[in-house]
Length: 585
Image 1 (cartoon, rainbow, N blue to C red):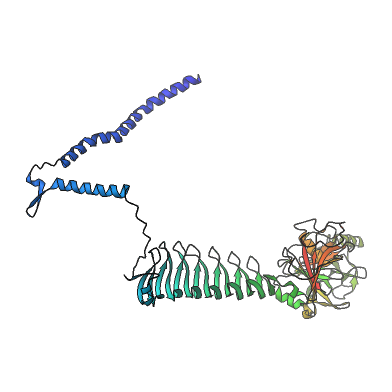
Image 2 (cartoon, rainbow, N blue to C red):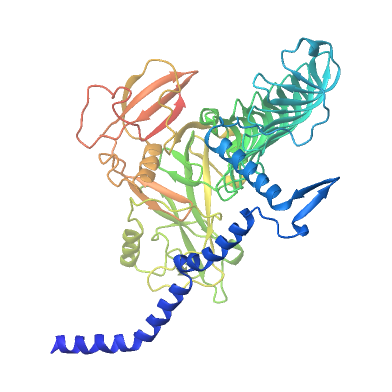
């Protein structure tokens, strides 16, 4: 059945397409070469026969030259034979002619010398100078046989190499140098064949500027601007011997400022400001090899830190130590004093219309328990942390039961070892009510940072002389650990983790949750800015490779699993440190 249907279909298709096929065949015959040739050959043969028949038919077949009569067809036949002979000779027998190199478009003079012509030594004026193969390579001014003045230089293939000033056969003055493609390579000043003075360097397309500014001895030297291959500005400022050197500004490939300040031999070094990829200033101060000069921070004051870093640090503290985390800059700064965070309610609104007083807990631990201070009388009463407690004006006890206080205290004292998030720029937050409590709208909490300026003598941050608080150490996060940047003998140093180790490890665990798994601690996040560290296990050691230089100790911390005990820290190349610290020796 199927075959029958296919046969019917083919027959129908043949019937439909057959008229069109006949038209195609006729068109092909009409334009067939053989058919056309057959039609034209008899006519052409007749014409050729009449042409070569040297039998004049009438006086019109002649033209007179003086008293002579010349047969037109004979003369035409002789001309055609001569042309055919020349064509056959150069095609089949004659040697090929040498290729003629391209010559300058404008020849200023007809005076031409070979490069080794003795007469050239005494010539002054405008001349063409040929190379050994006869190609004109120079057209321009000549003085006593040497190129001096203005001229154009080409290679032996006729490609433009240079045009502009010459002196003693060298590029001198203003000129333009070209790539072999003919595009501009450099435009500006020259001296003794080298770039000198102001000029512009171009990429091979002859349009994209790579550098615009001052040159000396063929190198970038002085003020200038450098661009990448895409034409984006990457640096502007001072150069010396082709390197960034002096004062300048470096940019990301996106065109956003990356650094502004001092440079040394191509690297940001000295005093300057580092910026994030979004263009926000991160740090202003001493810079080394394009990074923060971390060792310069050791011994700096709190006032110096606030002037150097623009971001608000997150503060981690224990009962005995404190550190500031500048997360965007990747730096953990250890302070030389203890800090404490206390919460007080707004004394300007300490009493509501009903005469109720409200209490705010402190995070300080006094006398073995969490204490709360009554706003007006400063009378210490035991209340649960972070729970608002209404009381009458004459009461010294909270209106909540002791059981609920204990439950709130238990809930609030839970700790977390998760990583901290980005710090808030404000140190104020609205306190949250305890279970079943309602907080009046006017009640606010201000978390106040206190520094221990002397033994058990505390001072609020607002009243603190910040030049009296110093940095005792710096811990550097990230992958720029300087393995080989310091000379000296390395030695093994195993000691218990400190608070700065906890903060560094907490940052590392966001990418590697098992990093330094033998180090345990708890984090109690007070708010976005303050985190209390507790339950730190001092029994386990962190193995370090240490170096001493200029009164500072550089410690490289290695990531070994819990329970691993090595006789000595790994040698260089055996393992990569996860972070390093700098502290006073």
